Image (cartoon, rainbow, N blue to C red; front, top):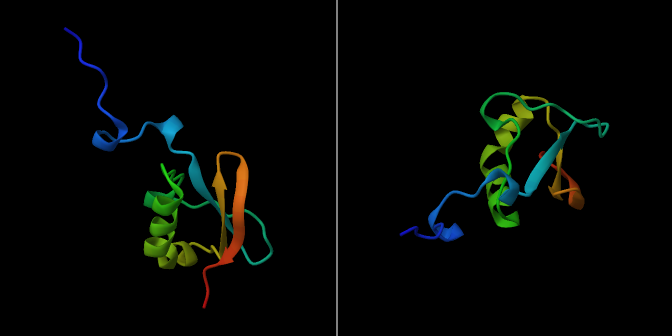
Length: 85
């Protein structure tokens, strides 16, 4: 007997299910490549993406990020949003 896959609430989302991501920018709007543990982060929901940027914005600023733009797949949702007060 084969059991069906666990519902998404009970397993980690697969990469295709993680559609939300941030583009990091400098003051002039040029894309900044984020390195280390925060590189290429993707999220299953808008709220997960927003929570993450709220937690790590200081680390992003240290890497030269001045603003972020939120995308769902290829669709720009909003931004640029400054990471400075």
